[in-house]
Length: 144
Image (cartoon, rainbow, N blue to C red; front, side, top):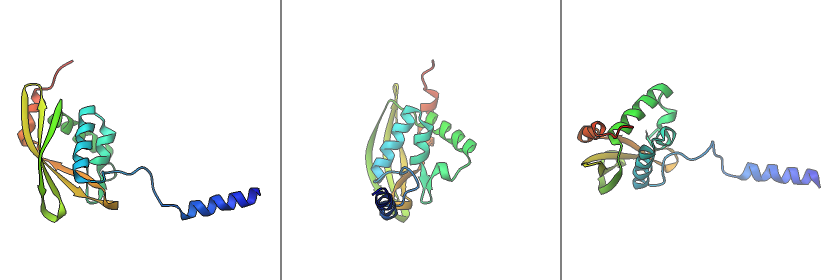
């Protein structure tokens, strides 16, 4: 009986889906933007690193850790917000999606573009954000 149970478990494990860990990215481009901005607001570098990426996958698998953290800290400052609103979405080059997003921090509201791209396993990643229009949000960070 014990051998039969072990054999059954091994067969079921062999037939199951192959995964290398938790899924990265998001199931849809809009969800990628929303999850990324939630991670920025929460100041969660790890969450940012699994939703920020490219057609090759999450940034955490593509960029050396120290460099990744430096870039994420800059993005946290520039994209930090109290609230956000997705204004519109449109097509980009090579199947990418462009989102116009409004970010508000204190009395300042700015709009900028985010680009989402599809990566491995049909998952979506935030590929880039135009930081120029939101740079003054970083200067308006609350202290203490």
